[in-house]
Length: 121
Image (cartoon, rainbow, N blue to C red):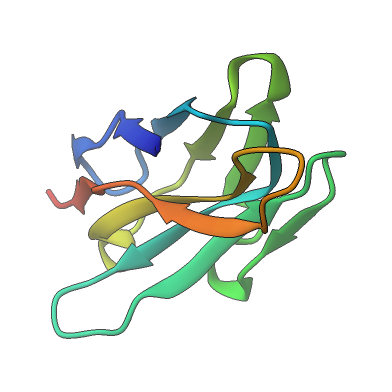
């Protein structure tokens, strides 16, 4: 079993910053891509950013230049530094990891419970 636990969400004023963290634990043999997705009220979950095991990143257009994804492979942890936050960034942010639990298993996606980010004055 693999668990993903997010932290770092909260209430911030427009223009402010937050740093999200997500730690993966449990029966982990290897982690491929890790990423962040978000879901605003009444909207579908959308991709925010992903990072491969070798550090290749991908961002959705609306957050380019403001958010930075990074990871610490030794700690099985992915981060999302969010700067210049806007009210439209308000959402529940979910962590995702593509994981093998053994050498012979298939790759499988795991999700965290989510952390609320609210941008408001």
